[in-house]
Length: 146
Image 1 (cartoon, rainbow, N blue to C red):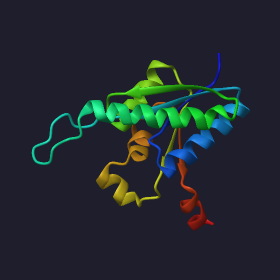
Image 2: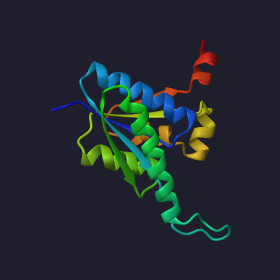
Image 3: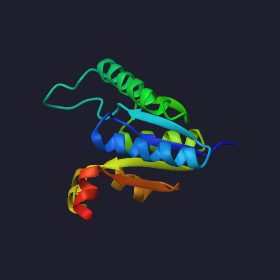
Image 4: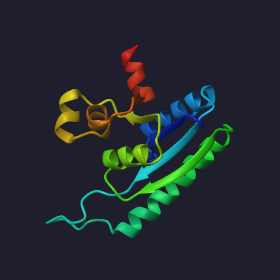
């Protein structure tokens, strides 16, 4: 049975770095990448109109297609997964359903307080997942840390 890595992907720079890291790990471990886009979120909101779910689903399908192309050049097995849920719950659900060994997500390098107040996906995953979670900083964040 192959090592399975769920990676959250939304097309952002942080997601691309996380995907590249997941692909590198999958190569080393003869694993498979389950590239996941969660398009959910609030179904209703009083105030500003929400983007129609069909539009979000179509955007997600396009983003996943880009991710599959990116992974395809590596030779690593990849499966695109579109989830109608918010980002962290969707990633946890996919990891559970597919019995994944780990979850990989990117981060934008926000502060701890910003992550707590804004509810970042990485922060929520680290504190609620029963699987290992790898949080990969963007290249810009890595440069600041050096």
